[in-house]
Each structure stands twice: as structure tokens, then as C-alpha cells.
Length: 65
Image (cartoon, rainbow, N blue to C red; front, side, top):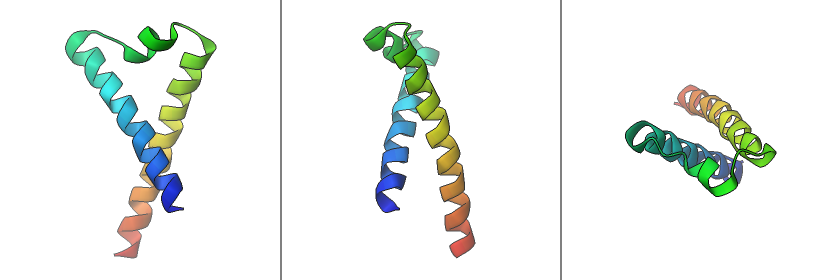
């Protein structure tokens, strides 16, 4: 489970950096690297799913304490 948590955290951080670049510089790194393709939509979907998984992990850790 720890590996899944780390993978989800890394993907979420990548998504957050991309959103930061969009907000600050109006630069979308994902679309620059992959264009407007199905793969780009898959990346966005993975970031969203991992964000939801991280919410679950957060509440799981709160319940343990």
C-alpha cells in the first residue's frame, strides 16, 4: 500500500506543478509535451483519480491517530 501512496502522491504533485505553471505563466506543460491528444486526457484523468485516492489516504491516516 505504501508504494501506491507514493505513486499517487507523485502524480498529484506533477498535476499541482502543471496547474501552478498554468496559473502563473499561462503555460500548460502537459499539453506542450503531448499535444491535445487522448493521452493528455488520460494524464488529466489519472491526476484526478490520484487526488481522490490521496483524500482517502488522508482520512485513513487521521483515523489511525
